[in-house]
Image (cartoon, rainbow, N blue to C red; front, top):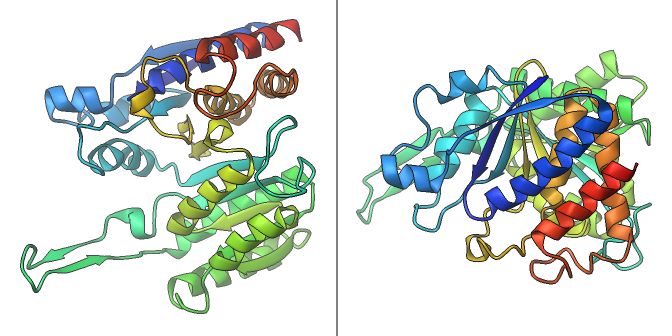
Length: 354
């Protein structure tokens, strides 16, 4: 019995969560396991009513679960940053979810915006350090609101933080056994302090403990170019927080769009949180037109992280069948050819028939 904390969140989050859990229920039944879901109302509506993004007890409560599943955070009536910092970043930081895992995989049946690129060319994973860098919250204002206003946002990297993300990435490169290759992405020619720490940690750890893994390096701007021109060059990538945030959105586009992109915020020794990448899409709320496949893929990642390989494989196989059966016309909102509910039913049906 796995205890799962579910945060449907804002906008279309509850709709995609509903379909993902529908698929999860069938997969767990087939795999002979059970999940107990506890729902939490964290999000914009709750914030507007109570004035707090998370109650003081929330983080300690989350530690009692085996995993967390998030729909989306973002409300049009709440100022940008309030919910993101108050819910997402707080949970990541205080639960020490120090790695963000973002598979970039083009599935059969999904249209790729890159010319002459298919599933055989796009199958890599970005490992993003998730608790340091510019997102750590160091900095502030001086003379705010005056012509002399000064604002600072400090990029803080620790050797400890960089090295544990790097080790996680090396372990994954060894586990995947595709190319046995790990790329470090940074900007060592300009950001010479923080990325020197990353560079030395990357090479020292690789030389001492992972001599079987080929090490490569690319500047972040070059990485964006190669994602478009030669995505087949990549296997596993490790990158600091802000650059990782940027390149994973580009990765989502080359794998077919936000409708298929899922991610995990991982604490290997604690509770991890899984989510679709696309956001809350509030203007589509309640229309039953949003694509739930990213949320379904996030549940697949959750089972994989929990060590339930059979349930994860059942879901991924069912997603591929749904994408190649001809019924899903597009991954774009309103163009799928099926409703949100019908896509969930389709995938759940393939899981049941496996």
